[in-house]
Every structure is written in C-alpha cells, then in structure tokens.
Image 1 (tube, rainbow, N blue to C red):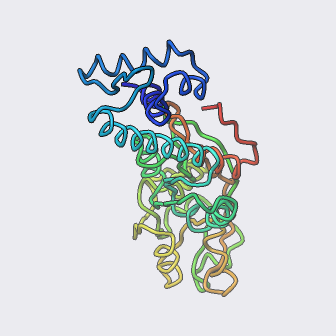
Image 2: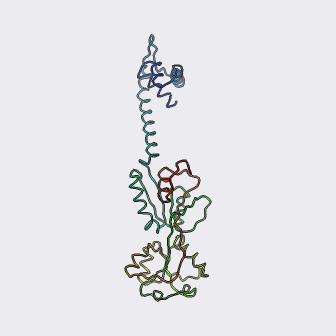
Image 3: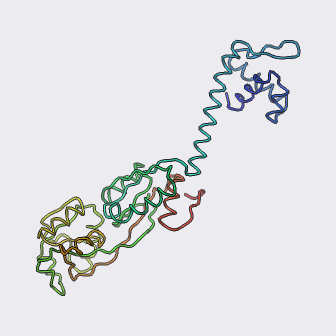
Length: 300
C-alpha cells in the first residue's frame, strides 16, 4: 500500500467518481482505476459498489476512508516537520566542548546562534578534549569543540579560533617577580594541572617538551578536573599552573594571580565532526556561524 494509492482512494471516495478524481489528481482514469483495483485485490475487500453508472462506498470502504485520511494527514504533518527542519524553524543540536571553550569562547556564539534560530534547541555537554572526541565519534554529540591536539581518521578537524596559554602563580609566589625561568626552575617548581586528557594540559606538556622539559619530570602536586579548581588552588598559593589567558584574566586583574615570564605558543580551538555522518541543517548553520563560511546543504 502506498501513499499515492491512498490519495487516489480518498479522492475517488470524496467525489464518488473515478474520472473526476483522476482529473483532480492529474492522472489518467485508467491509472486511478488500477490503483483502486490494486488495493481491493491486495486486501481482498471491496471498497466500492458499482451502482449503475456511479459508485458508492461499501461498509469496508467507509471504515477505510477514515483511516486513509488519518494516514495522509500524518504524512502531510511529517513532510511539514521536515520542511521546518530544513528551514531551521525547529530542531535539536547536541554539542560537546572542552572546558575552556565551553566556559569562555562558545557561549557568546551560541547566544548569537540561538537569536538567529530560536526554534533550534541546543544541548551543550562539557568535558575535556578526549571526552569531546569520543562523544562525536560515537554519535553522542554532532559537533565537538576542542582545544587540545587529537589524531583520528574518523574526525574532520577545523580550526575556528586561536587561544593563548599562560603560566600563572599567586601574587606572592617567588616566580611572580622573576624575569626569566629556565628548565631547572620548571622541574623544581610545584605544579597544579588539569587531568590527563585535558587539552590545556596536553598543549602545555607539548610546549615544555619543546623547551627540553619532559612532562614526566614535572613535580605535579595536584591534578584537578576544572579550570576553576586549578585557578583557585594556585590563588591559594599552591604552585604554578598553565591556563588559558581567558580563564585567568579576572584573577590577574584582581591581583590574585601573576603572569610568569614564560612564553608559551598559541594553540588552536578546533571544531570536530564525524566524517561519515551527514550533518543536520542545524549543525551546518552553526558551523557556518563559527567559521564564517556559508553553509552548503549538499556538503558533508
């Protein structure tokens, strides 16, 4: 049974005339008659009585008419919903972002997106870079935003912004007034860092390796799961840490932290997408918004 057969049946039932129904549907009379005959033959039920030169519904036909109308109404509604999704009038977008991006870079962009597309529901989950990559790979999130390096043949990676990591200490820490730090200082100092898997930690460890300091040589006295916890521990006088300048700016301005004279390279904020999944219209729109590129509904 097809929707086309149902449309023909309803049109014939409403007009009680095959030729008029066919004309209304822009079909030949033979095509309309064949559709009715196919329905009757397939289900073994007579839908119309032929009375003289006219037709009328049988009891089975009257019952079936209500159901056919309901099915066609549901099909029309489903088509409307698809049209609304394509037009970004409604939809749901699942995003996973690492902490620095989720806290300091992404919110303003999500607000702008929501204002442009108020019918799109956005659900943002926060973790570290490894969490975001896993969520996108497994389909738990359609888009991910990460700040750490990652290698995956299943992910499309697009840089969307740059961020500056800095090393900070409490205002009364000995390093606060030092003009220069050497490798020995970095090894002997105490460190408060994010957990393994964090983009901030990964980028910091890569930068230290370029300075000849392996991550295993660091004296890590605390590992904490959020930027806020790390910042608070260092403000309280527990060692040094590496943070995004965005995460540290309020404490620097308040005099609770001091920036250390150790230059770290800028890092990328990256958008990640699973390469084998067709992006939704909402995902394409957000990607266009954060990359500044027009969305292409035909591209993967």
